[in-house]
Length: 467
Image 1 (tube, rainbow, N blue to C red):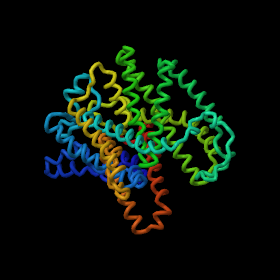
Image 2 (spheres, helix red, strand yellow):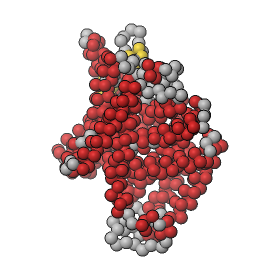
Image 3 (cartoon, rainbow, N blue to C red):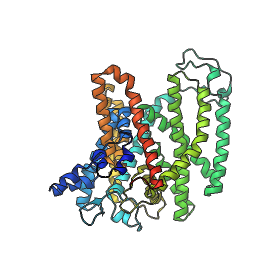
Image 4 (cartoon, helix red, strand yellow):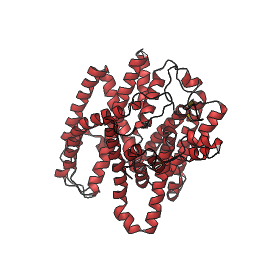
């Protein structure tokens, strides 16, 4: 199944019927004309192995919450918005009543408020839900930890003092195998200096703004590590929107023009989000190494080598995908693209909003965002303080619900629900096989489609992809 992403283009008459099931379009062609709305709002099934595997790994709570967010956003709210005239679509066919509801950019800034697309309208409730829920979750779970820390924990000199292995500590890794304090402190200093120098030279971000971005990244890293550890959902990219709001205020205070303000906003925001995301990923890697009894010192060295290679690899892959699919950088008015890049679209929309002279957010969207954001925090408080722990899995994960608002491709959440349902059946029917092979199968599905996407991009660049 992992080869289907690029086989689809070479077999246009057969593969789409296997890879994508457009139920609404099929019923429309059979005479059920009103069902075309199912197609217009993106409700079709796509056999995406990556998200099937993601559903297997994420678990039932996150997957069903993601799907519930998709149903609420694209099955209930979006049609209601269009019907009441609060949001609008863009026709994409002269022959058939096909409409796109995914536009995120407009030439006229007034259209963001007067004629928003459902995707743009839903963006703000989704972002604010994830933002408030993540901050509230971190505050609730870190509060006991902070109150239990003694004064010695905040003594910087004690960090560098020679320590003995604490027999009561769960981590019994020998001290000589741990990461020396000098390694990460010196590395932190050098990376801070380099970051400030590059930001000042290439992006005209002064030293104070660069250091502020890194401090925000440090704060956001706690959110990423905590949320990833509890839910397998890393909301750093969304939570870091708070840094965009902060730098939007800085840009306006400095009376920057709109375009330079957007540059400052995105550059500093990416620094904060990127550093926090790397902290979260590395913590997960170190945890895996701990479970496998690997030496943290050796893992740290391997991470440094991987980071060096990734500099060239990520740039090369970015050039490859944007050359194969130019709509990533230059989206059409309809907003449709092979690679939707919902996170990128959200970053761009927030940058435009906070740098505009007047906040381009529809009033109905803003009020809904505030209401759903407060409701998500209340649910979290009820869950932690009044709901017995055995029922926690039945409470929605509002990070995942908000993701359903931000991501217009509803077939992703459908695939994840299929994946987690498959897991449940597999676990009940063959527990031994599940324990032995589940992680390998899920990882293979994730990696297989990823490699298939790279190969598909190579074929597109070479002009032999059938498109």
